[in-house]
Image 1 (cartoon, rainbow, N blue to C red):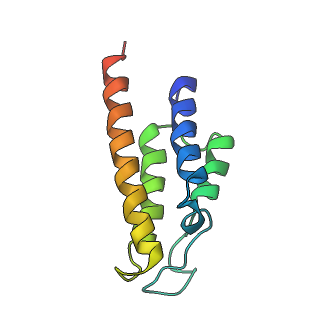
Image 2: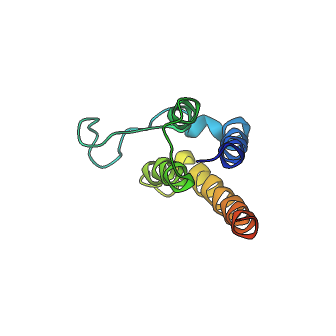
Length: 110
């Protein structure tokens, strides 16, 4: 991932982490169905931040997939739970932002 895209991913992540709803997704959530950490590798937004700092993403799609994975864990909670409602709002915001960035990246390809 080039430096410009990494910085844009960083901006997207920071906006998610400092928002009023960030409390729900900063730390890994237990998988609501299995209740076992052994079955899946769980992550939160702070883990994604760490991965960005350590240059673990070679493509922007890897970053986006991890963000979506965090949302998928939260969306397994009951529909009326605050975690589920928060994840839905944040996911909608992320997808809109991600679509806009992808559009810009396509336009600026060499």
